[in-house]
Image (tube, rainbow, N blue to C red; front, side, top):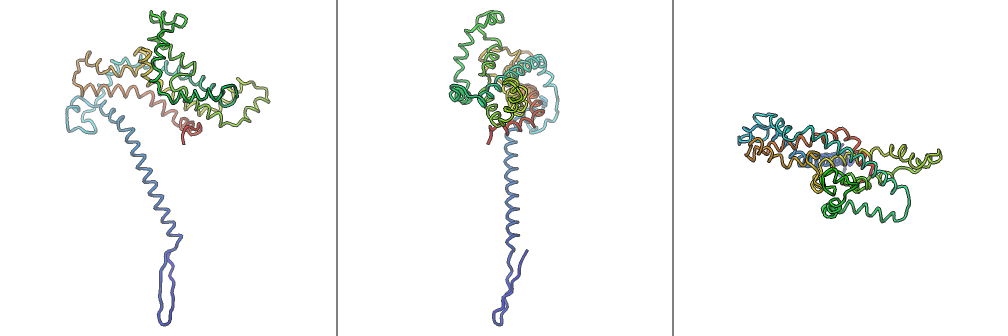
Length: 329
């Protein structure tokens, strides 16, 4: 809105037009808001492209035919799309058999981590005991120290450990190498894959819950275990979902511990991907590296599919749990 002011000086009349300050402020705020939205959109598009471009590229390669691989004119979309790569990869990976064993192995480890890590996190959040700060410092150290720094002690420990003769019964030799038992032992003892992070998440979440809930349960005559399982754990479902998603993804994609403990690739499907190109070269006589890459991309997409489905189903609860557990910001 403009304002016009007339000033009369002697025989001369001066007219001046001024811009309304409120309108100028609103215009400035609108421009500022538009620029912020534009900047946010550019950042999200850039980050999304960096994350999704490799996956989209692998999917496009997996449905490309051999002709498309040799055709220099094919750049983004294949000219003759086909699913024959998936048909052969399903056969060479023994996909359905291995993926069912892998999911059973992953889900059991996830359930154990949820049970153990939630109890440890609840203990740190609600109870006082000797050396509490020192032990929680050890949990933080578990998060900070890379797994590669302790791989030799872990290998030596489980190579020489024959728990109740299980190693000799399962592998014919002493020690637990070549079995999944080391992973279950580590998980039960709270030192499994990323267990330190999960303990920290549960600790932060339980600290954010009001103590009045437990006090009311105590007045009603509930014991510690009943309060934990029936009341506190139910209120911690966002943290449970968060840890479950993290655990499933990291356990399913783990190759470090699988190779360290010599776990069979008939159980861990992520280990089979690295040898897929060699298997196809030997059994199907496909020796061209560019064609082998198409089959490898198809195998990677098949391995990613279960984790992607789980994440899409639990996405809402996962985001809520991350926000409430205090591990961001």
